[in-house]
Image 1: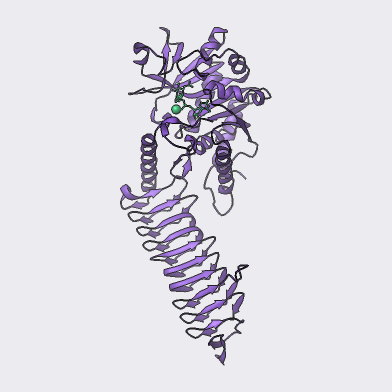
Image 2 (image 1 turned 30 degrees about the vertical axis):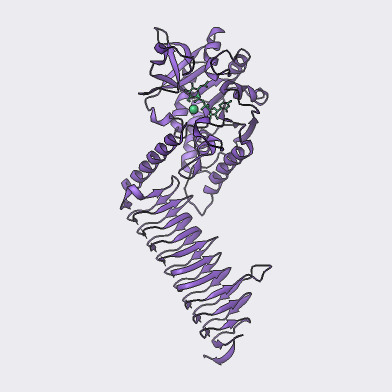
Amino acid sequence: MRDGKTDVETEVKTDVNTDVKTDVLILAAGLGTRMKSRRAKVLHELAGSPLVAYVLRAALELAPEAVFTVVGYQADEVERAVRDEVKRREQARMPALPGALPGVPARTELHFVRQLEQRGTGHAVMAAREQLEKHHGELLVLAGDAPLIKAETLKRLAEIHRAEQNDATMLTVLMDDPTGYGRIIRDKDGSLLRCVEQKDGSPEELATREVGVSIYCFNLDALLAALDHLTTDNAQGEYYLTDVPRIMQAHGKKVGLLLHSNAEEVLGVNTRIELADLERKLRESKLRELMLSGVTIVDPATTYIHRDVQIGQDSIIHPQVIIEGLSRIGSGCTIQSWTRMKNVQIEDNVTIRNSSVIEDSVIREGATLGPFARLRAGADIGEKAGIGNFVEVKKSKIGRGTKASHLTYLGDATLGERVNIGAGTVTCNYDGVRKNETIIEDDVKIGSDTMLVAPVRVGRGSKTAAGSVVTKDVPADSLVAGVPAVVKKKLK
Ligand code: UD1
Ligand code: CA
């Protein structure tokens, strides 16, 4: 199943372009020297996702037939980052997350191309030659280090490319400070004369404010032909992809330039300072979007909410909250300070008090958590349940109205409705070999400091006295006490 957005885009694609197919190639093999890092630049994270994931995401929105990623430096890790992003998109289409993200078009093939030595952007495309030769039509080339690129811009580039019947169309922008970028030199008619890299340019050439941003649309056949003519005759001794348009022109091919008005969108990340700048921009725009949709963000300066998080109307996010991953929070919720959450599904009117740490969990309508609650690995907190201070819940289902208010560990447990868990209760779920289950039926009262040695079941309506060590199943409506606990009396 696809969400509405992708369907619309697919339609747009078939309207505009019934016979030309578009493939995408992402340049992601370089180290990124200016990051001063041992990690490949495209693996550095922005708002919790690697840079390359953003580029891939924009590319997938075009529903391409194939995405080629050129990998080299830390090839396996970059490949994994790309595959993980695709998995994320697929996950986002699962029913638990209605309408969360544009999913992955089912028909997109992923290909990875190894560029063993990084000898330039042109060389990166040359490395893909063998695979590209099996394809025809158009190829969008994207830099893996420019994460803010929007799918609409790529669509527009492809449309103009087709409308002008170009063999290559380059996206360009005007930069106030073009330092480091390849300059676009035009002739007096405005056509491309040549591209000049920072290290190769004369002072007059470098004074040009129009730059190329490593985003191109090529006719594949013309691109492959031009690659044969690339040389390393330049200051860096590299094969420059920026030489391809000029080579094409020399062979009578048509090259177009598309001057894009939004320079911010195509900024590449070259240093950690630029990375932090983008992080701030992305964060601010996400918070603005949430506030405009009716979410109160008490202190935007200290609130960190990642791009794929959804929050409903009239929810209040207090200062110093972090919400990450594929998270969805309903309306009327209150999230208090110093809380960190990742991959959570929270229904309406839930209160999370200070300093709670919650991952991969579901919290149902009207529940209250914290302060200092810890939920992980598929905790499922029922309607109006209460999980209090210093309570850890792991892979457990907590029934409606059930309370565990203080100092408790609930792991691999299923708790019914209206259960009360006394302070200091532990589900002893691990026998040193395997994890065992605890089942606590409806209306049970577990006395303080009870040890529930799993596997064990406590029957409906029963009680355990304080300090009980429960090693055997407790029948319904009974009081047990002692070490090990034995039935003291029937309650009904
Ligand atoms: C490139 C462009 C420049 C443009 C700038 C910003 C060339 C010669 N220059 O310069 O005109 O203004 O991008 O978009 O193309 N990569 C590989 N293999 C390589 C080299 C690079 O895959 O051998 C990848 C990198 O991982 C990166 C992208 O290509 O994702 C751009 O590489 P980078 O080294 O940042 O190019 P710039 O010097 O910025
Ligand atoms: Ca760059």
